[in-house]
Amino acid sequence: MNKIEIPSDIAGPAPRHLTTQVMVGNVAVGGGAPIVVQSMTNTDTADIQGTIDQVAALSRAGSEMVRITVDRDEAAAAVPHIREALDKQGITTPLVGDFHYIGHKLLAEYPACAAALDKYRINPGNVGFKSKRDSQFADIIEIANKNNKAVRIGANWGSLDQELLTKLMDENALSPNPKDVRAVTREAMVQSALLSAARAQELGMPKNKMILSAKVSAVQDLIAVYQTLASRSDYAIHLGLTEAGMGSKGIVASSAALGILLQQGIGDTIRISLTPEPGGDRTLEVQVAQELLQTMGFRTFVPLVAACPGCGRTTSTTFQELARSIQDFIRIEMPTWKTQYPGVENLNVAVMGCIVNGPGESKHANIGISLPGTGESPAAPVFVDGEKFRTLRGPTIAADFKALVIDYIDQRYGKGSKTPEVVTAAE
Ligand code: SF4
Image (cartoon, rainbow, N blue to C red; front, top):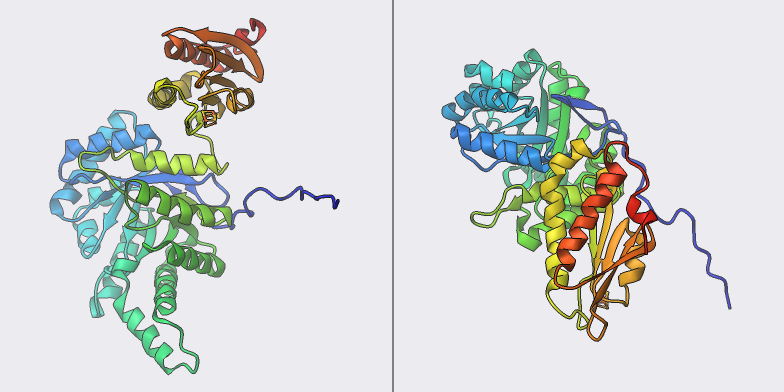
């Protein structure tokens, strides 16, 4: 029988595409810095308190930059008050202003807004039209330069520069080997971002003040566009699938597209553009972004809970309830734990439904529990650092396991941390 060779380098992402580092407030983007998670509010920015609350919630959830809409006078006037109130709460998360159509005017007429923001997002497809486009773009770059701010030049499939697209379509029609319309549109997306960046450089903006994006709503188009963009430049790159959608569709589409690009070393900052459920929690987009980066091994944010999917061997809802309760508990406690228990984000917890994979998976975790499946005796062995530690029984299994997790965290990551006593006190 032939021996199967297992290559030693089978796993792991490609080296990061080396980009020029940009400082956005106190956050480094690109140039090998950790991939930054960002998000966007959906409040009316003129609603100062509502926006403060949502930025604070996004920031607490782990968003390292937050974008806010600046669409009219009232919104621009509100920005410095929002910044001031966040600073008073100790929230230093950089704010990015999202400008369309009249960004040049708002930034000029509201200098306190221009000063309070850490980055301006410009859409080259709607910064201005015909003869006004160049001058309005130049006005924004000039204000950014004067205030020493970064910009994101963000092309978008839904508002692509129509003059550029028409020009490329005309050239393509005359070509002996014309490409299909989709390929030309992808090219227009890339060129729109790169030509605007070149124009900004001509206007005196250094490369280390610019981040580029070219967002598309279809996964394959997005991958192709960003691969081309990365191959032609070394600007820092903001990744995101635009109009990703709601619920699992949005999460799956964003993860598929961004996962492939990140694996290829492309992307310095990401946003997951989820449509929230009515009344839903906006911070879900931050959670998904963090989980994408963590499950791919790029960063660690929160302890991971491994749980089996459950099956016909799962006897009751105890298993799902415990997995959910541990996961929620960890997320809620994380903001406090981050300061109290340095390194706790590396913790792995396993919650398993029966003896088939339960003990094995639990042994791989720092702390894991294998709940009894159908026909098993009503006992739940707990494993700590690969060793069986204790067997839980009775109606308080969930609460008892949670207490063991807390003990483990305290002893492993708390002040004067040591090998957890739970290990030495194992059965
Ligand atoms: S560990 Fe047990 S309960 Fe969970 S999926 Fe596997 S067989 Fe089913």
